[in-house]
Amino acid sequence: MTTQSDPRARSVRTVAVPGGDLAYEVLDGDTRPVLAVHGISSHRRLWSWLHAAAPDLTLVAPDLRGRADSVDVPGPWGIACHADDLALLLDAEGLDRVPVLGMSMGGFVAVALADRHADRVESLVLVDGGFPMTPPPGLTRENVAGAFADRVGRLERRWESVDELLDYFTATTAPLLDRDDPLLRHYLEHDLHEGLVRLSGDALVGDASDIFFGQGAWQRVAQPIRFLRAEWSVGRDTPPAYAAADLGRYAAVTERTVALGGVDHAASIMSPRGAAATAELVREALG
Image (cartoon, rainbow, N blue to C red; front, side):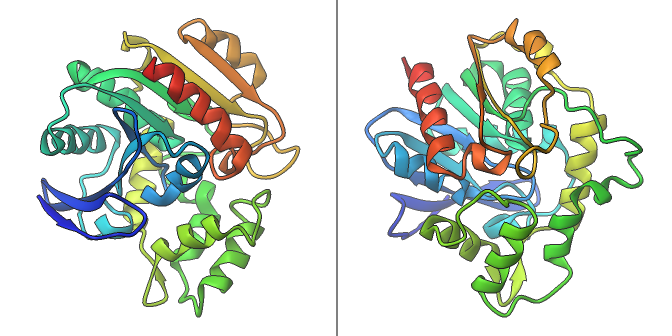
């Protein structure tokens, strides 16, 4: 394990996983550590909003393989592989059993970690992810990249500046976010290196296929689950990732389900309101 300095974290570190070194940082707080797992096209700075809203929380936040500082860690891709990587991270940090927080795909990884390494997971907080998502009409394993056209679009060009990427990001992926939010700039700065977004297209497609067409483990999870669901998917009045009709099904297996109105998928964590609602669930999980 190696360590390097970062003014916004206690430390930025790496842990050896099959194929390379996985990067992660520890955002210091007063609580015991919470493992925080980002979404499919995201990275560890997703949790900047949560840490700003709740600086008391101690967060252990990786860049999953194929993303940001871990972009050069190759496949195999898939939810189980990410879960096994995170078990190695917990070993490196000397953490036996932790609460796990996951957003979007990170929720699926959290569920897989709780299933595959049950003794390492104390509880789960799932933010608009982790439970089965209905594939969009016509989606197949062969055309899954089409469901993430905005993300793929980030990979197909060289960005002249963070401002240019900010304009694209808030026009496509996250239209409800504040374009002038300094945390959003900080987040997108971590995406870019020499004008290119540090996201593996193969990882994006492989992991998306696993989310929509893989065999989820949520029904086998025995640990307490708290679930936050966003009202919309991408922008106001868009169909949500989880239909209202499904909430009762998932509420039956959760300690608490929160249907957060007025936010879309990205804003469920990348906004003060979403971060505050998530922080409340994490504090409940910490007891």
